[in-house]
Image (spheres, rainbow, N blue to C red):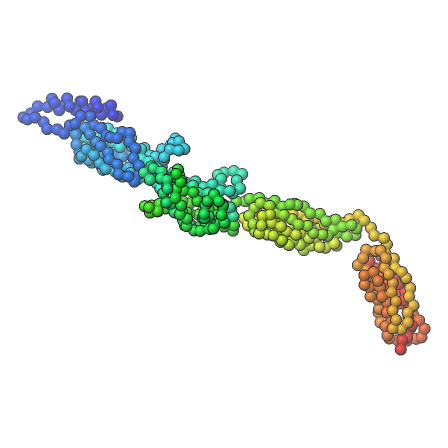
Length: 433
């Protein structure tokens, strides 16, 4: 198009020179029509001058993207001042470290039809237009982008304030919490002092022009969009940045992951207790037993690792009982508790002696040997003979009350451990007065 403009300019000159008439023709010709700079580079928000030379005024002007670079439709002078806007859509194929830009074509046409167009690159000029990044200590997802922030973890924000394309060292910047369950960690120094959490944090940029802030997300924070503001203290200019706090589905580990309690006897189920340690994830941890036969007690639920005591308490019920542990983010792990019967047997229950003769208001005792324990006794005539078991000793006592006739009577008393039944015969006076 620029070559065509030059040819048209020559042709126009020849045509005007051939005109006849009464007097000399007056024109505003100035040679070949041009726009400067071409190519040009403008920063958004900064006044810039476009020069138009040659051709014949007035000029008809146009912009290929007036939302980014607006210019007047008609120009009657050799220059115009423009203030480009920040481009939202940028040119494709830019290198990672290049300032985002949008190339706009500015065209001019004079009254004789001469035409010229120039390429103007409008560069983004946000306060942090191309220099903000967030790096976190969150667990890496199995797929997709890295997590910017997550509950109970820290993230680093690196901001590079830019003004008219220039990086500034020792520039005072202020970070502020606008929205979200996070705070800034102060101070951010190499000495690692005690952490203090604040909602506003002021720091100078370093010699590379970087402002670095550390944030901490509350352990119970859910998935949300959070916002922080970066303000240039000197000018008051600020930019808001939105980032995502993700309640990542992390993993926690239980050690041991299985517990098995085995009884010594074939007639009993295993009982006992063990400590379980919960690693990774975010405390506090909680635990839930799925059975009344297994109990779980928190020892140190607010530390990492968390410590719990799991106990199987019922020796009469065997089975498999899950215990579920959960961290503050909802990550879960299950510990399986199994109670089993053993293979051992006890010697058969024996009682000595198995017969007693006692008088009125008198007692006698027998000793239980062996058996499965848990002994119980039953007198066939408790109105005359009572029997009480304590440990492995049975005490028999003659109570009052006439039998109705003289002489002695024999009262059977049965003793059992749940598997064996033995009878002790107690002979007492029929009548006690």
